[in-house]
Amino acid sequence: MTAKIITVFGATGNQGGSTVSAILNNPSLSSKYKIRAITRDPSKPAAQALASRGAELAKADLNDIASVKAAIAGSYGVFAVTNYWETTSKSGETQQGKNIVDACKEQGVQHLVWSSLPNVTQLTHGQLSKVEHFDSKAEVAEYAERVKGDMIVSYFMPGYFMSNLTGQIGRDPDSGTVSLSLPWDPTTTWVPVIDIQKDTGLFTAGLFEAASKANGVSVQGVSEWLHPRQITDTLSEVTGKDVVFVQQPASVESAASLGNRIAEELTQNMILIRDYSYFGKGAEKDQAESDQFLVAGAKKNTWKQFAETAQWKW
Image 1 (cartoon, rainbow, N blue to C red):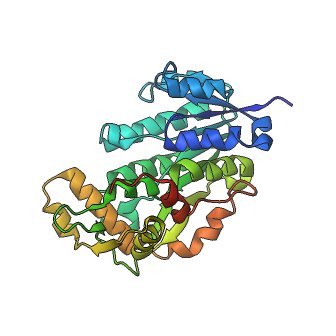
Image 2 (tube, one colour; image 1 turned 180 degrees about the vertical axis):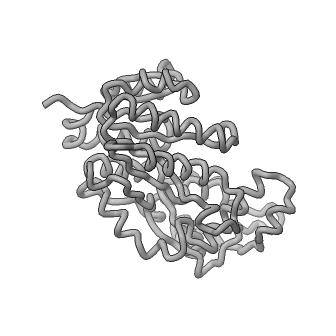
């Protein structure tokens, strides 16, 4: 049986790299699928490392739909992720996503897995309207649902990156206290954390395996749901050092007063987690519905396991 080609955008990044590894490291999956890794520079060591593992390398510019079409030609499946932070342009990221959707349709791709996020403006009824890096991806998903025809489209929605916490937890130079300071309630806020490098592929490869059963499905990409104090208590246990959580005040008004659109966006993002459980109120109760799409036999990483191997600079 000829292996089906799955083209992976951002193959040397977090989500794309995890998708590649989930397939290449699984004998059952690697016998079914051949990886085509899309990277901006196939000559770089990270790309060459993928080639040495058996991936085919290709290059594409997401702003040039012709190059996207050429890159995905002959693919059974496509995993696609875009990076808002490269340009901080909502319209730019949305157009890149639409280019991918249109190219997949025109090239006869059977299954697209799109890295998406909730539409925060809609979810919060306009209360939080500045979280562009969520809304842009959600608008691409909405577009895909309108135009996909008989193409299967699935949506992977990654939670809060555990790796973000390595930069957010630090030592106060004055008090010497190691702390995590964010506008969350320490014992009631649910934070959906994910080991983005290890666990993304367990979901995305699982969606490809589910085929038509995953059509139109949005999965919550979460390794573990935790309260903020559980995050710091676990880190104290792992490192043997006191780590505390400090709740910071935040409101839509205070975010707007920052006078910086990126700072306002990120503050609203934290309020989204505090007041809407990131994916919507009560989303923590629904995780099992998403976990059924994990690769068979997969075990997600825990925050404790991540913390034990992470590099802490304090």
